[in-house]
Length: 241
Image 1 (cartoon, one colour):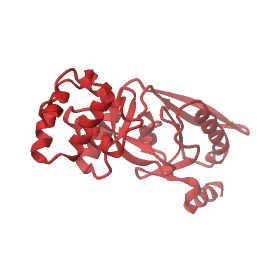
Image 2: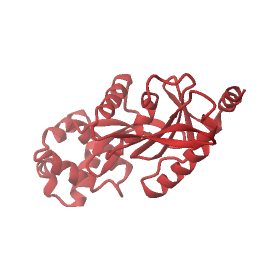
Image 3: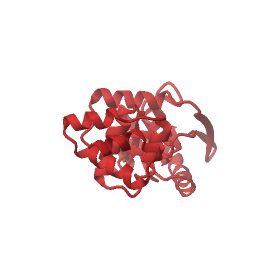
Image 4: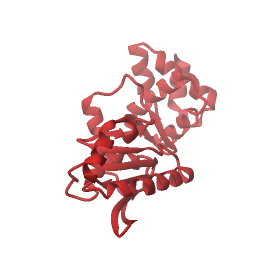
């Protein structure tokens, strides 16, 4: 145990095997050992996080579990990200080189609220309005992009891109971690936006860190793939009449 405490006091200067051993011990320690291992950590937080992050790519689940406990102790920010074809909202540590999902059994309503609030407060976002030509008319297509990999989470608030919120919800695409496409559904022009939006999503996904090339329907704060619900087709039919 004393050797592990020594490792904890000098994590940034330790080789990979020592860092792995410390993280594994942290993940499997009893309550008393757990507190001792965390309390012994010394040094610059940024250097510690960098040393641990370097071990995650090929790390075992135990290494990841230990890293999560350490990151939580060091108060590394936890933010909300979208993942998978269903755009599930997951919690992740915001690391200098990317993200690491928190363990699946972590998180209550308050933690999710805090994680979402951190993402909403991020700066550096740019919202651009484009016009899609539809026969003799045009329809707006909004593109939000930013430097953070959590930019895609703003798809949850895409109904605020063009206030007031559209009466029929918002058509959304999340092609990459750094971009959100949105069209407020106010009338039948949405039909003419679908194909251009799909093409733009596919093109963006090829150039960035991809999330999904599907289209989603945002309503009541929830995102649902348009090809997974018959209600969207019903909406298009009603708007066309």
